[in-house]
Length: 270
Image 1 (tube, one colour):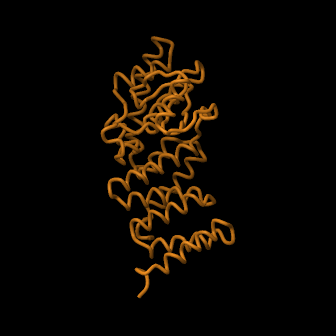
Image 2: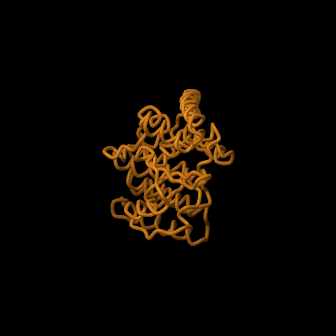
Image 3: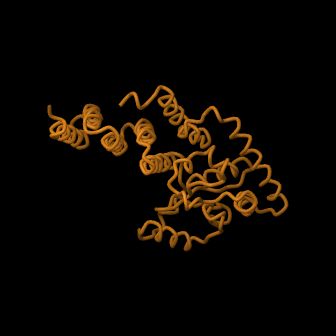
């Protein structure tokens, strides 16, 4: 499977790891997209949006509502429910161009703009959805709905409808970059799979596994994507690599069992 993960993609994964350490959201998203060479244009767009928001904030003395007024209403950043599962909705440069995206990417645009002008907002990774909170006033906003202002109760109701999970207060913990990145990458794995782009799904899974080398879950995700995209031989190779790295741990033993089972499949025997 190495021919499906180029040197450029290895460098993207390395840049992403560094960005997480540096808490650099913009660089992290560009690395995920494979668009680090678009950094200057992305910065210029975000700077211009921040200047607009700052003007409204200075007039109203309300930075949170200024974000909603400019990004949600004037610039019409919002969700794309008709094409929700397009991979482009997880790419920062595409979202900045189309003003459409997934909840987490739209929230990231708000975060990147807010940080430029000192508006204290945080991302809240609810099950099934992603929203923002103003840390000064404890108001919430849903960029997917054009910046609709929400209460905490409305956020819980929204999450319950989207995920079916029972709401709890722990859902409101601010989301760090190290949590945002896996969410974006898992979305990309799923959505590249949905549009029959196995290479895109494999790239996202490999990057996730690269930045979380001690977590078995993304390693197994790579194997599953390999099985769907390239068949049992490719998946067996991935599982064997996992077994070698993880040794006699429960995850390592499970990987070895899966590799052995794949090697014994009738379509693998000659």
